[in-house]
Picture 1 (cartoon, rainbow, N blue to C red):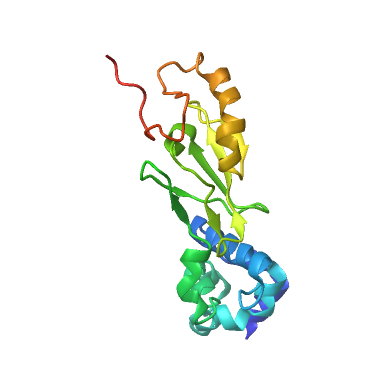
Picture 2 (cartoon, rainbow, N blue to C red):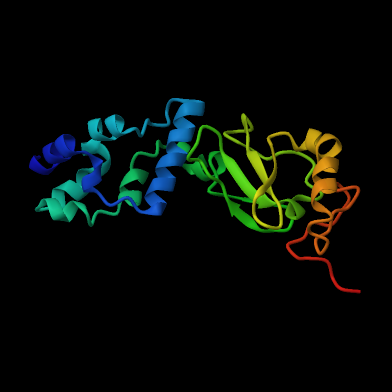
Length: 198
């Protein structure tokens, strides 16, 4: 009880927030925003109010404040997943999405909208924007140039291919001649590589 009180007073910084735990928290926050109940809120206030629920077993074994830094925060957060919906967590807010080349790329849930940053050439042949949250939310695609910078940002691939791609192609084809810039990206082979030398 003393450690729980200490946490409530000093905040969640007493815990160690690994990248895994931070990403898990962002995915939970996204589902809470988009779908509401039963997905729990995970703001600092929410987590501190529910500290006994998700940190209970760890608080039972912790003897001193320094023990809190050793808690597996990601595993603790998973205790907040609602049952039976927890079985669909990875489907509703997938950590990674597969693109046409077969690459599985991490989705960034840190902002208001989920973002997938992917090399433009890896998306050739992708007819429509992927969605999350049961099809309710289109993923914002950051289509990257060969230099790894966004050449285009879209949540509507269906419109981007006929309307936006030609100007991106015109701008980048001369700058990156080793990379494929097909006239028809929907029928082109997606690739991670540069063009083969003849």
